[in-house]
Image 1 (tube, rainbow, N blue to C red):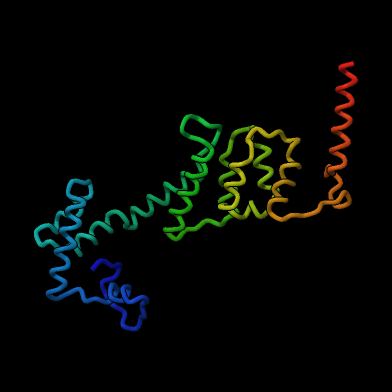
Image 2: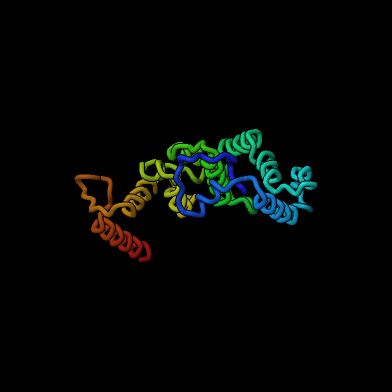
Length: 228
């Protein structure tokens, strides 16, 4: 009764059986007349008081649920509507900005806006590459305090090429991180992705545990001396 194409391809195989019946049931005959009347009554009950009613009202006299559904699809999911929706999605991606949390508009709201736009575009057959999604998201972050967090994400190819994976990681990064903390952030993120023993020969800038303890002990001595 409700399907994209009215015609039936006799060579096409459908699975499961319910899908086969939906795609191949004849759209004519006594049963079809009864069914399209029932479908129309259901649609009318749902839409009569809604803005969509005028777009199916022309089929009211014949109670043609099949044509009423087609009219609704043409109006709400036709080419012109899809093009407008896609344009709106691209505007959301390219023009939205995050300066700082303002009332109900938080960083998570900003990320959600991008995510919804990408899901819509994917549904319309215009999926955007992962790396471009991430770059678009980062480009709209105008909060100067987020510089270190942005660079931390850009430093790790896995996050830069996976929009979904990057989101929770970025949300967990404090947006007030100073730039001098960047190397430590990146090392922590890399450790979460793949545990690795880092040596001084491989990454000489890394502070080892022994060095941290020695530095802490030195700081304690300085504090004691200052108190004396």
